[in-house]
Amino acid sequence: MKKLLFRLPDLPQVRQFAEDEARAAGMPEEAIGDFVIAVNEVATNAVTHGAGDAFIRTWVIGGDLVVEVHDEGAWKPGPLPGSVGGMGLWVARLLSSDLTLRVGSGGSTVIMRFPGKG
Image (tube, rainbow, N blue to C red; front, side, top):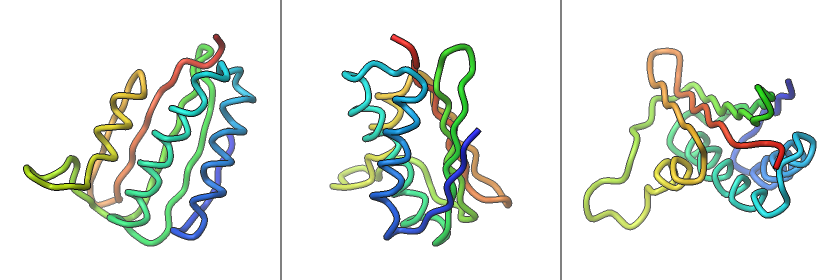
C-alpha cells in the first residue's frame, strides 16, 4: 500500500503518483488516461471542497487497483441542477468500476476500484 499526502498545489504530483501506481498494477496503457482523470477529479474535490490537506493511497485486490482519497472536510456529492462545474464525482463514477463515498464527522472518503491487469 502506498500513500501520498497532498494539498492543492500538489495535484500534478497526485496525477504522477496515480499514473505510476496504475503502471505498477499492470493497468493497460489505454486505460491509464481515464484512471488519472478520475483520480484527479476526486483529489481536486478533496482539496477544494473539503479540508486543505488530503491523502491518497492505493492497493491491489484481486488484480484490481483500489484508490482511496480522504480529507477532513464534509463536502456534498454531485452537481447542483443547472451548475456548470461540480461534475468530478460523476466523472469518476463513470470511469471507475466501483465508487463509494463516505461523508461524516471524520471527513470525506472516496474509494474507487479499477481493473488492473489487462
